[in-house]
Length: 159
Image (tube, rainbow, N blue to C red):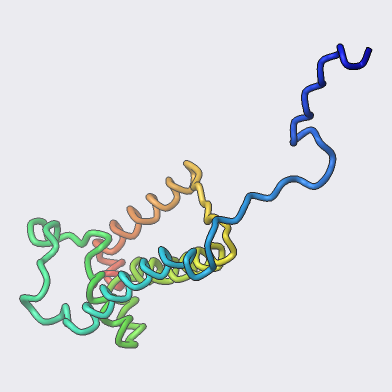
């Protein structure tokens, strides 16, 4: 009589008791999983090395910022190459004076890269989905930095 009854459908894995399933680690060794973060680091380090070797304070090596050239106003990136050069050569105070926002970006990149590398080595994705509020805060900080560095009292932020 039991043979005439249909087999019950297997329970959905989420409905089964027990610990939740962990996402499977991507195949490969930690070294393979680190290829993209290490490649990114190599590209950034190469760019920094070039800027460290070719001084942006010497005319003719890099183009002038178009906004500064045509308006005389500093954009958020003005002084970024000088900041990178000073940072890579160990002149940290000069780097902050050239572009404080860029120095903050270097430090945030370093922290983000370390998190990315550690999570990649462990086979975990790095997920950061910024909220609308975070986008607005970052954008507002960049705009405020840009405006203040062009005002007389903010000249300390000008390159």
